[in-house]
Image 1 (tube, rainbow, N blue to C red):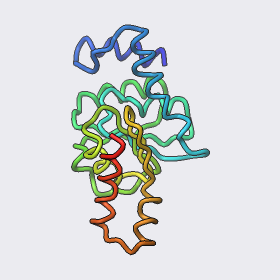
Image 2: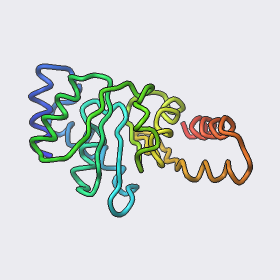
Image 3: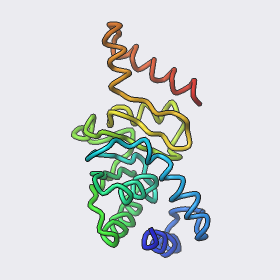
Length: 178
């Protein structure tokens, strides 16, 4: 994490990655905050997409903690992905980088991940709609919502609900927690 923090501060002088650049702030508000999702990760190998990753939070710290994580970072700004490519190369972390808007992920990435994470991206209801199609489970940082797509789909199936009704259930669940 030390290399990551150093690169974050260095690159932040050239481009706006974060307003938090003091060592304690980075440790607490970026690293520790990102790692609060760690107990929710599955055992064994898993794939994770960090949607709207920005400077790589929470995806990179989680993948550094869990080497069995197959990490994908999605962001709309190529300059941030260039930074993340440098970080991942320096810390020897395998990563797939996707330059795309969260609203328009490439088709091959839909339902391709075990977990979709996001942190400080958008309103919670919109975040659920962005993340649920990509991962089987969604961990939205800074919100108290951890929805499993499988469980929502199973409930919808058992009750013979349509996809649009299932989507409404997700929106309602997200709004209730917010």
